[in-house]
Length: 222
Image (cartoon, rainbow, N blue to C red; front, side):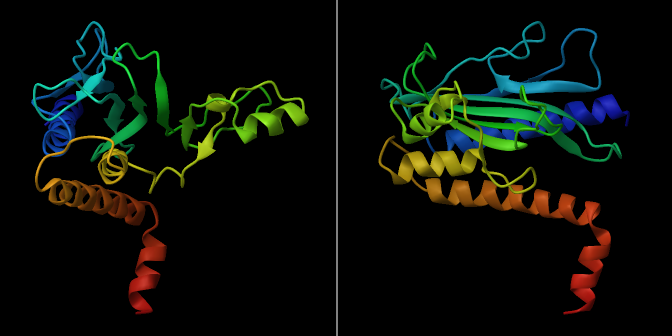
């Protein structure tokens, strides 16, 4: 199987996994798609209601388990490619957003991930995995004002544990349910546990592949 065909297959499976998670917890009948932009082959995008011509389009996912009006909206978009060895799918960048309204004009929070560093105006890299929290008159804005940094609260990049074991969509879904902010399907916890276990196993395997000597040492030392 060619590298391009393998990416296509694995990315579609990834899109199906996300759809399954959401439709068994807080949404109904949504489906994410994988698209490779025209002329591309090495990477593509997994998102909601995207097309080959517009693979990076941000379309809100209604958070409702039936035909009722959504309580809020999600945006999920992943840029995926094969890993350097060409054996496994890898996320090059992603964004998972929570919005109050479907016009995306009232953002609440956004989880960002960039496999490669993104640098700020000072030439320093932002954390690979970070969260932006939207709000007004936060204490961090007061701190920024004191040290003469012109930045509103949502533009701060709060680190969230590094690229390997970063927060996931499962965590955000669980937050919305546990805090009583959304309606949810029965057995939602089983769906989250299944998908979280798969994610953790995938990341553990990747960590072992990148740190074989440490893994072998840990096993040999008992």
